[in-house]
Length: 163
Image (cartoon, rainbow, N blue to C red; front, side, top):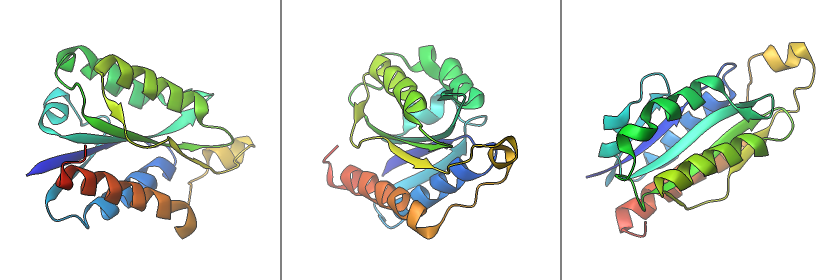
């Protein structure tokens, strides 16, 4: 059975909720095992055993969150040259933009020779004040629906051998 690994990091809950929605969508595909791991818990072995990936993180100060970047730093070289061609997608929870973090993930994925199977999914919360930025992010069903769709699409593609 193929495994879809969803690695996430979240400070205020937005990216975690996105990852959980993707996992629910992926769970609709019975032929694929879905693993949802916090970035702090995920390691090289988790990457190696998975057939595809979704990476979910917030954008902090126009960059990928520190804990998600640390996950990539910690796992990059141990799996280098062992993940070529595997599919991935990225989800970013951002206050206003998100493209900086998405570009960082794309550059890392290029080094691993992963294959993007979807455009980056960026949910903008419009949090612009210090209080709004630090507040817990409660995403709407409409915001989470594309995350679930992405999880289901990636899992279905893995099951069908499309990816």
